[in-house]
Length: 336
Image 1 (tube, rainbow, N blue to C red):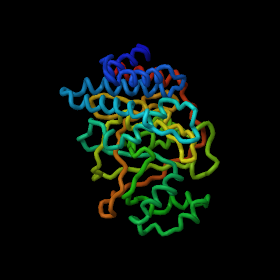
Image 2: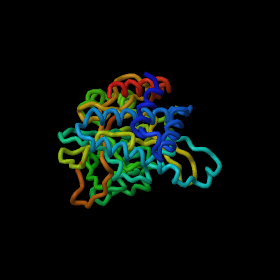
Image 3: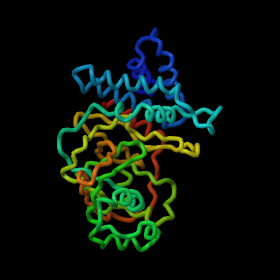
Image 4: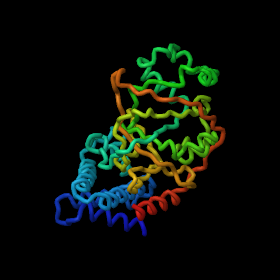
């Protein structure tokens, strides 16, 4: 099995008729994904293949498969309509970024996966303390009157993390607003990651969930401290098996700077309705995950999440090679 095999499979599904008016445009974009020297573009091609193959095997009717294929077709055709920022005039943009821009224009409601989990599960997120105290808390301060400190004053206080660990008012927090850059929030299977968390093996956990911090530790102390956020049992948002349409492939900032997204997202399809992370190091089995839409609710519809101190990261996680990511994507395609 090679990437060329995946390319042919995707092409035969997205543009089966060479006489179709859209054949050339779709093939041209897939050619760019195939021939790109950037692993992001190659990975995107293989994720699309995994999604299509899995939907063919999963659904007995054609409706769901047709919806997925038509979504990919429309996004690819929309790429020509995307206006590049002025800073990129005359410059080429990698196809995975073109895809990300087109997905954003396509709209979240059109990207929603067909595979929706019906069974109740326990979910969890892992994040650094800086994200929690500077994003999640301020966005939900109106739901939590017990949180009375001045965030602008205290977020630079190096002692605040120690205070947080003994402050019972932070053990639970009502969340009415949970956002993300793509509009999709990924949640882990709590049972799948519980034992490493209980053992406080932060480096192993971050590795397995695909949480890459870069090639050096942050200088800000709050960004090296991690917490867990446990979802409540009454969480009622739809939980979805992720497709490439939900992945963070990157964006272009308001200043015209190209920003890469999640370097380790890979589609994953089995009949248990879970996706699966790919480890930063390329070693290990990853962790089961699902996604839900961001939400912004009224206070009376907010959810009560549990917050637990985790541990401090004091060592880097060695990044997997492009070859190992590439090989894992091919294996997932074969297993779909």
